Amino acid sequence: MVVCAESKDIAIFDGTSLKGWKAPDMSFWSVRDGTITAESTEEKPCKENQFLVWHEEVGDFELTLKFKLVGGPKANSGVQVRSLVQPDGHVKGYQCDISQPDVQYLGAVYDERGRKMLALRGKKTVIQADGKKVSTPLAEAESILTDYKAGQWNEYKITFKGDTLTVQINGKTSSIVIDQQESEREMKGVLALQMHSGPPMKVQFKDLNLKNL
Image (spheres, rainbow, N blue to C red):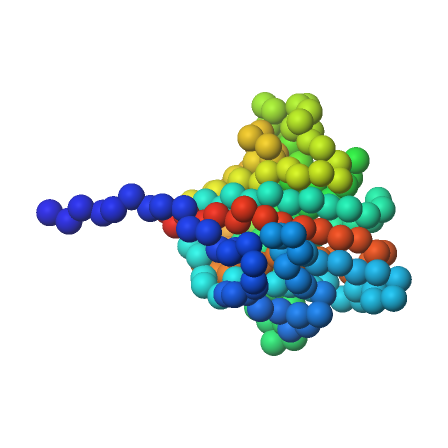
């Protein structure tokens, strides 16, 4: 009989360096006050989406992290999961979106350079084998942002098991995707943090813990 040890949370950011992480342009990424920080300014604008990639692939996993987004209404970021790094350094695949709370992208699931929006915040989407998307409201749809603090630290919990991706913000389920489209879905891939192109903004991440399921 083989006894499997229980998976444990592994810290994938040591709080002091970007060891294990890489990006085509590292000039946008730094460690500040114990956080992974990406910032664009008027003097150094972000003209193309930037991605900081964790060096190991993941399959079934649970990821928890805290994030803080500062900027105008178009400030945008995200967490790529089970994704692919393309030759130009762009990361393609599932993205758990981060935006300002009055924009419905926050807590949604987007397919970067793929099928685009998969599930808006407050929705559960089943993507059928032929690609048809069927979305229904989640029970917590009306209260997802009750405890959200704009411009302050909030928590993401992202769980991907089999064909089901579940996203939670501060303990409330913000979106679910059940992806049955075998021709388009990915069952493993990289993790990455994104800073979106556009007006000046800053996004920070800390307490990143990964559990392989």
